[in-house]
Amino acid sequence: MRRSTAKRSPNDRYHPEPMLGLGIDIGTSGVRTAVIDPSGTLVSDARAPHRPGAATGDADAWWGGVSDCLRAQVKALRQIGLDPHDIVHASIDGTSGTMVLVDEDIRPIGLGLLYNSSGFHEGAEQIARLAPEGHITRGSSSALARYLTLLTSDQADRARYLLHQADFILARLTRAPGHSDDNNALKLGFDPETLSWPAWFERLAIPLEQLPKVHRCGEAVAPIAGEVAQDFGLSPDLIMHAGTTDSIAAFLASGATTQGEGVTSLGTTLAIKLLSDIRVDSVAHGLYSHRLGSSWLVGGASNTGGGALLRHFDPDQMSTLSEAIDASEISPYDYHPLPAVGERFPINDPNLAPRDTPRPASDAAFLHGLLESIARIEGQCYGLIKDLGGPPVSRVLTAGGGAENDVWTAIRARVLGVPVETSPRAEAAIGAAMLAMGLTAATQS
Image (cartoon, rainbow, N blue to C red):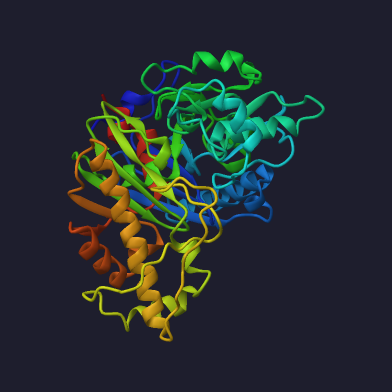
């Protein structure tokens, strides 16, 4: 691994030790930040809930939550005797496929659309006429169809930039809109091998000038804006780096470096990533590959997960009921738990309905069936990668709230047939900080 000195831009000033890296994670339920030293050791973190409106696509609410978290992070650093001005590199991760249109002053044009929004049939029909069969942009829930839908809401023609969630925060921090990373831009159609947008985009009814300039994840983009640095108490020399998606940041935090090692993020949804030497894609299954240095990170995101469980039990109930479950026993119930209609991976079907019946009389037996069914879906995800030519999973590291449930971990290990461990660094914010500091495989080739 290389030290962050290799990541500075030519115009970056010399910074004597200590120097710190900041990661900003915009998750489904809130915002988290992490500050690490040059060895990758966590020195401080903070969190803040989303402000009202964030879950409905209010980008100003995303910014508000990030602002709250940054102020809490600066305060936390000062309380332990560290100078926030020692933060010299930072990057951001956000939910994959969440996007918003903004004007030239980075003001949102209406509400954005979230990663799990779907039903964009008109846009999908336009794309289907031009996109090659099997292209990642095809389908009524694709990011490109989402963008076409956003365009229809810009009746006054005020939009100047299309920004992913992480891009929007990057733009607010740097006051330099129009930048993205190759991980977030993948689902929009950006090719991580040719580093270009598809040629057929020119025949699609989109203003190409709105598309962001795409950087390799971890690449230095711009310094933080002076007035923003002053407002938060950060250094004006802080360099912002191209970020990534939340599940990739969780993978980077885990430290997984060997082909076949997977990271499952068990949060509101279930996301898996598997390190591979080859690229594996299948739009029909919601499977795609991100470039990670000289390797590929293969995976996808299912709508199952914690959000589906919360339809039936609160966290305290799940904790209590788990104590009554024998993880060595196979549950006879075969469910497909979902928080609402629609699935993305390993079945790409926006009309798939939740399947959580029959419900047994015992709540513990019902929870056992739900947990085991989600584990089976996880196994199907990893198995699909192998069936399509990728490596078999050899070990799974777990990030997210689901990693705290030891019974669920034991069930998953039995179902998957490989060691399942808790990621030693489970927070996506840590992965984003490592990315900024040049401490990941994503920033090496």
